[in-house]
Length: 448
View (tube, helix red, strand yellow):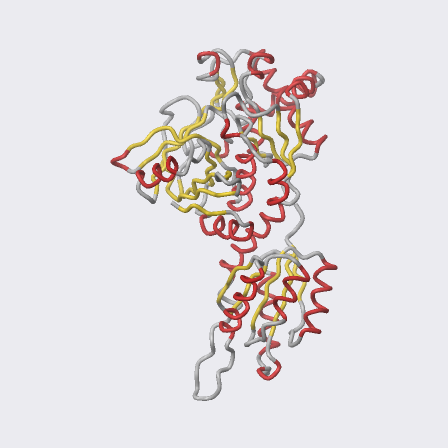
């Protein structure tokens, strides 16, 4: 992924210019560059001609987001001009007012933000707000930049849909062109036969390397025949080959019944392995689940967990997230290790491999779901909580979550809202980032 490119547009009103502004501009540039972005910094803007010139430079440099910084009050024509010419989200930066000493107001920066946010709201242009000095805005600005980087990544994301949705799972239906139009995500279709064919075409040497690779992250291998391990290695190699061939960022896989029936094993451990390597992989043909995994991976910096919500401990306000063995091993609970095993559900259970069985680690989590509302618009369920250290209470990948909201509120929101049964868990408190992502992408946030 290319580095985030940020356009910096400092503004002031000509009659408010003073000898402190250039120093503030230099300190602000240094603060933004310290966040690891590629900065395209403009001079102090005081009129529309300045703004026109900088907009042309931002277009030429193809910036991903603009920071419009009000060093003092600024008239309301430059910011809409920049927004419409450049066409990227705007981060308003307001400055605290200097101490009053009985003279005229020195900055009036917040008032400029207030005036210009009204204009962008009326224009339907995405924006957000940061308030502070160059020395205090790092955390808030970094959060904004993570969201901008996530949007940039989505615009070039390509998901490989292997097969289709699984039988009866209308929850995995999706609108391909709306997804492309609204989020920029492209879907490539891959037949299950292509996966099997690619697996069979791996050379013995390639299969050996893949086998070593898929077993390296497991602390044990319980009851999986050697033949199935070799097939699992070939499946992993096939996914990597198609990822490279088609330039994919992730997969949504029809993981049952055909792969198990035709190829003789499940694909769970392969999906977890791919996700651990940054190639997100959602089960049961769920494209929106794969897109949500991309989002949470980008916003949290860690691998996400794709799961169902299956049980509750009402006295403790704890819900159990679980799936059958496709979690990334990097999320394994402390003191535990992954065991490659037989699938607990497929063909009645304990017949075919391969799953990664382990409980997930604790810590702050954000429980989410991206999907369509009844009118086809996008919505994002968001609930924060704490992942609790979980034992191997059942085969697969369990995670106990103590939610910050009452379970009854969560379950009523899910059921009354007709949300689907697939969820994506990010291993960080990224509720603020997701809400801003929703704002910039015109997604309805449903915060529980």
